[in-house]
Length: 428
Ligand code: UD1
Image (cartoon, rainbow, N blue to C red; front, side):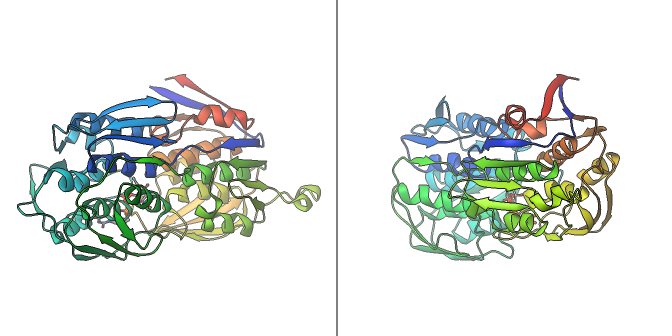
C-alpha cells in the first residue's frame, strides 16, 4: 500500500486544470446500457471509481476502449443483468445500473450496497420509484432482484429527500417507459443536468432540467450517445480551498464557476478575493490583509444542503479551511449521518474542533495553527481535507490509506506539485 507524504507550510500558487466529474461520469457510463451500439464519452476522468464502473459494465457484456480521456463503450451485446457484491461493495454507485438494465432487458439483479463509512445510505427511494413504474423488486440474499412482466409504465414519483443517484436511476428507467413519468422533489445537481443532456441527445424526451420537477415522456428506442462529461465541481472546490488554506493565490481552470455557487460565496465571506470567468475561478488573499501582516481569514458557518446549497462533498475540506481561520465556525452536516470522521485526524494536527451530533464547532487557530502528523484517510472527501491540512501545516504529514483519494482525484500529486506543493507517494 502507498502513503502520501506532504511537506506543508508553502503557499500554493499557479494554475490547476480540473478533470471531468466522477459523479457525472458514473451515471453517463451506466446510461450507455440503454441503447445498443457504440457510445462515445469524452472528458472521462481516469480514476479508481471510473475504472471499477467500466469493469462492471464489462461484466454485463459491454466492451470498452479508452484513448486519453475518451472512452468508447459498445453495449450491443449484453450478456448479464447482474452487479455482484464484489463490485458493489467497493463502489455503491454501482446501483446506477439498476434503472437502465430494467429499461433495456426487463430485469436486473444488483447487490444491496450496505452501509458505508459516511452513513447508512439506503436505496429505498430507488426501489420505491422503480415499483411505481411497475417493477417487482424482491430483496433476497443481499440482492435486489428486479423484473417486469409488462412494459414499464410512467407514473408520478415523489422523493421525500432529493437523492442524486435515485433521480438518475429513475430518469434512466423512465425514458423507455410507456407514457409520462413525473419526478417530484428530484435532485438538481449539475451531474443530473449532464445526464439529461446525454439522454435527450440519444432521443429521450425529458423536460425540467435544473428544476426539482422532471417530466419524462417515454420513447420506444434510443440511439447511441456522443457526450462530454462536465468538469468536476468538487475537485475544483477542493483546489480552491487548498489554495486558500495555504495563504496562496491561484486559478482553477476548465471548470464551471456557476456550479459552485455556495462555495464561492463562502470563500468571499471569509475575506478572500474570488474572481470568475466563464471557465476559471481565481482565488487570492486580499492585499490589505497581507500588507498589514494580519493574514487572517474570518470564520463563517456552513450547512450542507442538496444543490444549489453547500455540497456535503466539500464539507470536510471547508472544515480544514476553518481550522486555519480566526473565530468560531459552526459546520452543520444535514445529508449524511457520519461524515465527521476527518475530525479526529484534523485534531491530531492541532485543529480545535468539537462535534455535537450533526454539528462541528471549529475554533480557527490562524494560518500557522496546524502542524504535520501521521494521519489516516477514511473516505474520499475526508482524505482530501487531510491533504489540505498537510499542505497548510508546518512540517511533515503522512497520510495512509490513500486508495480513498484515488477514487476521486485524477493526478492529485502531479496537480499539487504544479501548484508548488511538496507532495509525493511512498510505499508503506
Ligand atoms: C451522491 C454522490 C455523493 C454525494 C451525494 C450527496 C454520486 C455517485 N454520489 O450520492 O458523492 O455525497 O450524492 O450530494 O453521485 N437516501 C435515502 N434513501 C435512498 C437514497 C438516498 O434515504 O434511497 C438519503 C441518503 O441517505 C442521504 C440523502 O438521501 O441522506 C441524499 O443522498 P443521495 O443524494 O442519494 O446520495 P447518493 O446519490 O448516494
